[in-house]
Image 1 (tube, helix red, strand yellow):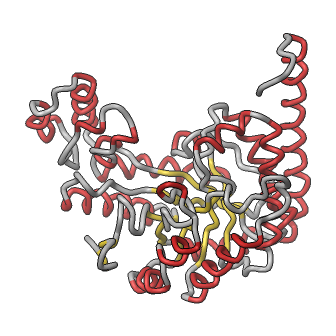
Image 2 (image 1 turned 90 degrees about the vertical axis):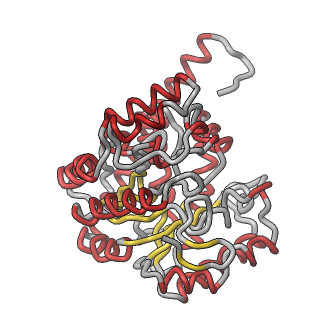
Length: 379
C-alpha cells in the first residue's frame, strides 16, 4: 500500500488496521452466513449443484477481449445465440461467464454500475438463460486489478462493486445463476485471501441473499490452494478449484504461461521416461529439458490424475461441502489431438467418479471445443 508518510509507526498502524479489517470481514461474513444458512439449507445447494455437472467457459467475450475491446459490436458478435444453442446441443448444462469488472464499474462510485454496460450484460444473460443453461457469473479481472487487492482500500472498493452487482443480479433465478467471487485472485498470503474473500462473500450476500456463491483458494485457485482453504460459515457456497496438471502437456507452446513451455511441441501424454526420451534431444534450452525430464519421470497417467482429484474429493467430504473444477483444459495448437483427447477423458472420468462438477476451458479460444470459424464441435 502506498502512503504519504512511510514511517515505521505508520506502517505498523496500517498493518494492525489491515488485520482488524480482515478479521472484521470474516466476522461479518460469518454473522451473515449463519442467518443465510438457516434460510438456505444444504439441500438447496445440492439441488442447484445438479446444474453444474458439465460446463464450458465463454472466454474473450466480456473479459480478456484483445485490446480491451468491449464495444457494442464486439459484445453483440463475439458470442451469439447460435453459439449458445450449439453449447446446449453439445450436452453442456451450464456456462461460466467471465466478466471484466472495469467496463461496468463507475470510475467515481464503485457502488454504482454503468447503465449502458449493464444493458449488454443483461442481454447476454437473457440469451444464455433462454437456452436452458445455468450461468456462473465469474469476475475475471485483469492482473492489474487483482494486484491492487494488496491495498485494503481497493478491497473495500471491490466489495462495494460486488454488492451493487449482486443486488442487480438478485432478481435472476437463484437456481440457475451463481456468483463467483473472483477468478484466480493472485493473493499470495492464504490468510489475507481468506479475509478478503470473507468480505466479498458478505458483500454478495448483502446484495443477493438467496444466490449460491462460488468460492476458491488463494493465488491461482489450484488444487494446492484449495486444500489450504478452510470453508466459510455460509452454507450456501460451492467451492471451486482449477486443474491444468501436468503443465508441460496442457500448456505446451504457451509462451505466456512460463519460461519453459514455449520450447515444447507434441509433448506426449501419458508421460514416462521412455515417452519423452526422443523429445529431450530436440529441446536445446537446458531448464526446459530438465522440466521435460521431470515430466517423464513423474509418469502422469489416468491413475495419477485420479489420485490427485481424489484429494480434492476427500477435502470436500471432510468439510461437507460441494466442489467444482471450473477451469481445466489443454492448449490445442501444439498438442497431439489423440493425446489431448486422452487427457480430457482421464480428467473428466476422475471428476465424475468423485462427484465433482466441471467447467472446461474454453468454448472458442486457444483451448477450444469448437472450430472458431465454422462453430462446429471439435474432437
